[in-house]
Length: 130
Image (tube, rainbow, N blue to C red):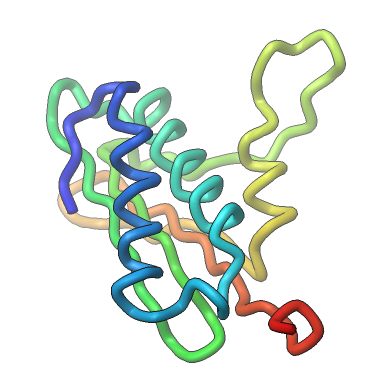
């Protein structure tokens, strides 16, 4: 789904991935809050670092077996960098959260420029499903 590059759209991004989980019958299989948080962090990073210049951003939700993937398309070819924020830094912890909540994450280049940043959220284990 395409979203205008506006901070106010974060709520819609969250609703979009939660709606995907609902429509696909996955609310009990995947951690909804983790999926939502990852999607909003990736979208926020695309707003800040993705050079949207007014162009819409694509958010994709995919489900394959035991993995729920969130992808955000942006226009900056440079990949995200995991960095440790200090106690004094007002921001810079988003990718640390993504890293902690995901089985893996990364980026793939796209033509003619830009990238897809993706994050794979694992399904809940059997003990969490009870």
